[in-house]
Image: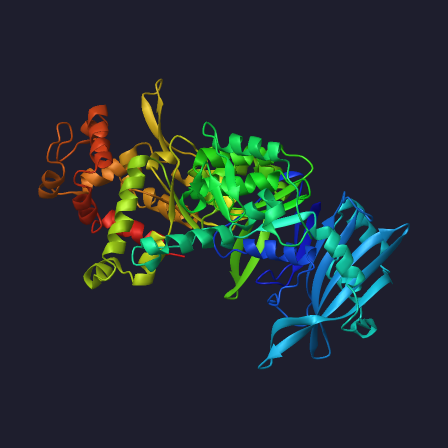
Length: 626
């Protein structure tokens, strides 16, 4: 089965990447456009005799070879350990594409390879041509590095030298030309055996045609055609559940353990029970036509069939959870996690696949820009430092915190009221993005508003995970900001013996911390230019913002004038205007204000009023900065 892969210089992966896979569960996640599907495509190209006509795009220097190498062990064939890979290289001005196999034979390393011409259009290489030449029984010279990688998975110290020596083992000039009537090459024969143990699913596997209310296909006279198309596209079910009917030839027929299939399906769909019936051309589920079956149930059936096929040892599943409810996704995760003898590699955006148990087997695709050019990389959680791994595991305990693994920008807030107010302000800005007066007042352009509102909000609640979140965001290249209450850093301490108070600054790892020791009261700290204002500037460097008034509730009440207050809080019993410090700290007043925000009776008016207040302007300016 597939144990590891390395690749470089393909589709925005400019630097060398290495990924290790294990038995059972392996998860690839990341935001859209971060290169997840590229990994699947490279695996498929390394494992299949079927060559794609499209050529993988390269990045960086065109003269640097683009390559992908997959390492396999415990194969049910001889040799049982081998490397399968592809590379594109230049010879003069001509680029060529090669698929190769390297394997251990006795104490020697041998290889075989196939060369394909690259077809150019308008001076640019557009596609891969037909198989033109091959080589077999090629002696490989760099024995030690290759043996260590094949046998132990040890990554060579110098990857570029390692790959160039592989490429030099298959020079273009020494390939033997194939005649049109010649049988399959040695490389194809090995790949043909290899792909018998491999299967991958793609998003296009959906069996139902997409429809909308304007479509002709929703009319009754299209029903028969829709039924026929659905059954024609249900290849996984047809070929695995009805192998005798599914394919005209007997070639590559797969056999499944139907008891294991039904048991797996029952575990996924409990307490419901579903059975596949009909024929290969009129498939039914519990007697209902496939066209009317829920998508999540169809996905569960397809997974259970692949799971129950003993031939497949390396299984790549892209978005296998489509249409499944969260409970079913968690069952799917546990089935894969406990499986043995197979390597499952999943691509998903579903946070239900992420837990503290699956994190060590999770690989996060990260997208960044270097000199305005996209550059992807893969961050394997098992390769993180011990402290970083602990941080990631802590975040997986809360669904909201898992967003860090998928987001581009996040803003962490302390409580639910904070989250509602900030979401409301962001929403108001987006709704009034064309309001030139508003943009002028806040010094924003439309792009600023889009960037600000694109932050995903994470509610920390009672969790004080600031340092852990910062660590994870740094590892996964996520822009991270915090909106915290003032008391997260400023604490009033009392000395009962001396009958005195003082200001203590906590959670603050800056040398200037001692400069705040002179303040004895909160009022003096806030009013003195060397107090709160200095702390604010220092923390904004650290991408942290807090309200000068202390908490969001204080900001709201103290920012409103009497008429605004009465218009918004029409039924207030405990909140009064103006609000004294003593009144505000009363439990009744605070709870009532939070209740107003959570209930949302006048939130639209509240957000419209707040957005023009000085503290909100300061917050917007903070969010605007890169």
